[in-house]
Image (cartoon, rainbow, N blue to C red; front, side, top):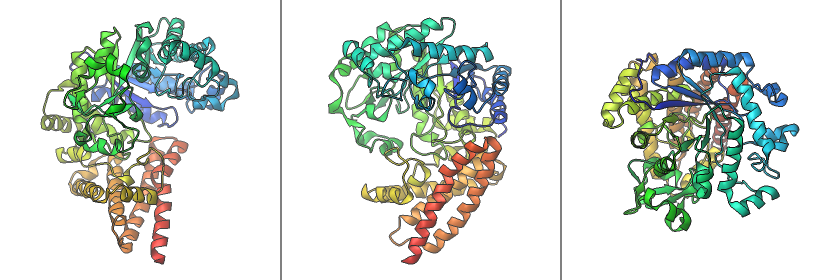
Length: 536
């Protein structure tokens, strides 16, 4: 895409989150991305590395990093040359299972719990600080070090942690550990995710005000939402009125772990009453932004520009009210910035996200503008046809075959997904979505300028169309085997093209991993379905 340079017209930082811990793009691709991020309007990049960095003082991780010191020198230089502030998520206190692969590093983990560091341990705080020193040695201009801290749902399995939690609560254990890390890194800004502080708010006043809170809220859908979230994850969500939930979230909230309003904890209800402002089964969206600001913290608002379910193309059209309102409230409550989160590879690849990245920056410059004006300005900036641009972001409703994960966030077979649709009584609704997707993708394919778009957009469009056509055929009572075989052959060709594309933008291991998730398993299962159908 030939993109017109965009300027961030307000004083907030716009951070792009680039996940590189377990899934990598090539160094060449990452380096080429940096000037593009600046061109799109971003002011900073958050490199999510965790264990995937050549830590000089941690031989086990240095040996197994997919990047060398020279690689990172090139990446950091590219970011600096693009005038992007550099932030790094280094050793995280949460999501630590990979550390357990190294016997010498297990001492930093909570006993009986590989999912987080031992928050009772000064040694674990030293470990984060030592790793930070290795990062700073390669990147002296590091703007912020992020230490994670999200989704520590199993915190407290060790006897020592359990005893401290019983005495003081989980919130104080988290705050004390973060303060311990902060005391070791006095000259660097530290960031952490917000959800544990919301879920366990009892010790918020003990947390150092030097800590920058990355407040992630991916689901608020406008000024008011028919649910509240106490943390961030689906299990933290309490539904106030299911009839008012948006199309995207109907699928997401159809799992029972999104709980009824009657189960809202009394303590949270009392503490956050004025921030939630529940009336007529609706609550204020993004309530904890003001809460953290009232507590005196600097806040970064972390948003999601794609729908939570679906992994091929971003349905950003359904997220505009989420993005607009989060930005408006971030400006109102004087947040320091906003962060575009991209959790690849379960969700769209970076090239497919570029239209959403452009649109997000346009919205940040003018969050009060109406949707049509925002789309037009973003399309003009992108160099894409306005028709293609809008369809790319509105024509991709999530359907079962477009998602690498099922309703329960697990990988499941095509047959299992079809059975789930049937068991849930969702066949007609699913077909309605499939017709919308098929029509939208066909319009894009027929547009004269389609074949001038980047390969990273062309391939997902074709993939969406083929998988939607297959699913709608297989949902019929008597599937047309001839049509299915024809589409299967097209899928095989498409898969080969996708594999070539992946090899162009990422190392072989990452390319093979994603090819397997997106196509290899899919084709194998589809072949089995065809064989069984042919015997009937």
